[in-house]
Length: 496
Image (cartoon, rainbow, N blue to C red; front, side, top):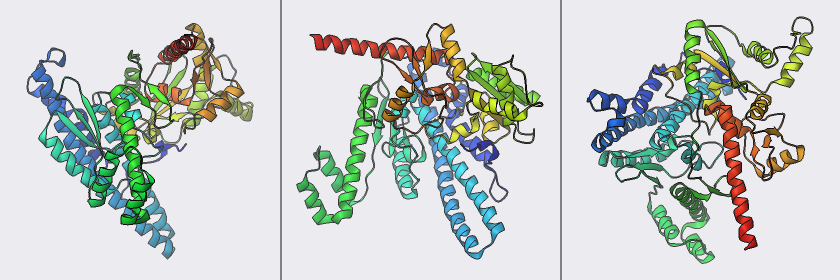
């Protein structure tokens, strides 16, 4: 994994990026509530139905303004990337090494700026969905977000503008500017009825696309006869376009049905999923995270531990150099305080023991660049997140699975290491890319069958969703009880 805190979002050959990010953030996170308060309306808990509708409209106005800025800046970035890619080819052809180095650095900064803007669009989607992350995860189909097409984005923007102007109780998001929504061209949330209504809309322009839409809407399967007629009229390229549109249509229908009924097929795995009606509300450590950053602002350095399983260190970027090695050493002795330090007497042995004992240190800033991570863009009252995004504060996190096992034993909800056979089985069944590989293997519950496998994806919830490790353990057992109930029900049905 790349250490993103060594990277930068600024470059002397480019305009300052932070004012752009701050303006967009204000529109999509604060504009609605601040305008609502300026109007002198009651606190939301005391609000009437009319007040609530007014609040939704004000938020959607801010969303629309923020979306316009996101699109303008993303498209400008894509043009800059294209321009500098051409310059890079010319510099390499001419053998100008200094120019090549300079342009490569600019291109990297532009790529990183794109990731940040798309992460902000992800956050906007989460705002629309009332912080229900499971809905966002159901809309993810690919490991990496599709590339941005200016033509497609402009067409979707036109639709979104008209839709958002026509009804302020609904908001249409251009999905191509996000990294986490791969279903449809528009994600629309409508608050005009008794319950919010979610729509995924696929936009099709041109005569061939209109013809394709009629075929797909009127047929569950593309028969050989239909394909032959279409090939005779539009050739093999047309048939490929038709097949691609059919797959998109199927994914969209499955996704919409899953979100609407809270059950259906998981696009990523092809397995049936059921969203349980009893929601497990998790406590989190986000407030502690804010206090840590505030402490760094005043003292320059801070370190803390959460429930013996999660260690977090933070320092100001004005402390020059890469301090990940020193922080790893500090965490190592935090985990085993009685162990003597061998750094002066036998440095090689000490470093080996650190490597054997610790999992990778995760740079919190780099979390922005994971496709399925939703950055907490609202962090504190004074844009604390910008200190992290722009490298003024470096946050390093370490998740200790040994500590999690000890915590689970204290809670009398024990976990254990997976066996090699279990790990092999799990790896075969879960063919999904994980950003973290734990050398000690995954964890499973120790209780009776059926077992619940806990892999790096679960650990990410602690690191990036601010879930307390103890609540993660409760969630594992909560899930296991659901599985046991399902198995009992299936057994009873077989007996009957």
